Length: 337
Image (cartoon, rainbow, N blue to C red; front, side, top):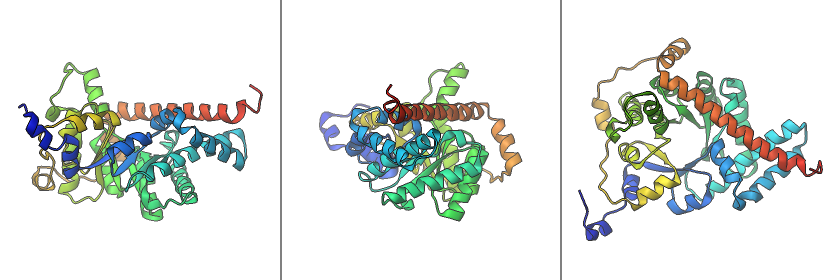
C-alpha cells in the first residue's frame, strides 16, 4: 500500500516506530554510526573491531593498545594478547561515551570450548574496563553458545555478577540451556540461519514471516516469555529490513548501520508481531537439558551444528588477523623491518 507524501512526512520512520516496541542496538564498532542512530546499546565482535581498527580515524586507539601491551611486557605472545584485550576495551569505553546503555565485548572465540579460560578472560576484560573507569554494570561479556560457554556464563553471572551475552546461537537447545543458566541476554542469529537454508535447500527466497531465522527467534521469544525466563532475547545477524520488521516486539534487536539507515528512510506502519500475551498463550512444553541432552538435541539440528562451528572459526580467524596487525605495529618497527 503506497503512502501519500503528506502522510509520509507525518508518519514516523520504521526505525522510530521500531524503537517504541523494541530496544534498538547498534551492531558496529564505528562511532559515527552510533552518533547518527542513537541506539540504547551497542555490540562489537572481533570482525567489527578488526574493520574499525584499520580505519584512519581510530589509529590513536590502536597506538594506545600497542603501548599498553608493551608496557606490561612478557613474551611477544603475551604482549600481543594484552594489546588485543586493551583494544577491545578502548573501543568499548569510547562507545559507552556515546550511548546510555551497555556495550558487548567478546571473549576470544578460540576459548569457545574452555570454560575456565572464558571465565578468566571475561574477568580480565572487566578489570581492564575498571582501569578506565567503567563499571561492570555497563558491560555485557559475549561468549560462544557452546556447552562450555553457557556454563562459563552461569558462573560469571552467579559468582561474579558479570552480565553475559551468549552469541552464535542457532538452535533451540542452545536457547533453553542459556535460559536455565540464568544469563542476562542471548543473541540468536537470524541471517546466518537463512543463509544456511538458502545454500542447502531448494527454496531461495522467503517471506519474512516464513524466514527460518525469524521463526527460530520467534519460538525462542515465545518459550522464554511463556515460562517466565528473565533472559533478554536480542535478535542478531540480519540480512534485510524485512527480517527486522517481522520481529517487531522482540526484547532487543542488534542492527548494522546499513540496515539502520534503510529503516530510517522507510515509512511503513509497523505493528508488533511478538508480544508477551501471545507468547503465554502459545503451545510449547517446558524442557530441561543437562549436558548429555543438550549435546544430543543440538546435534540433531544440522544447521545449528554447522553454523556454530563456522561462526567460531570465522571469529577466531579475525582475532588472528587482528593480532597479526598488532604484532606488525608492535615489533616490526623495532626490528627495522
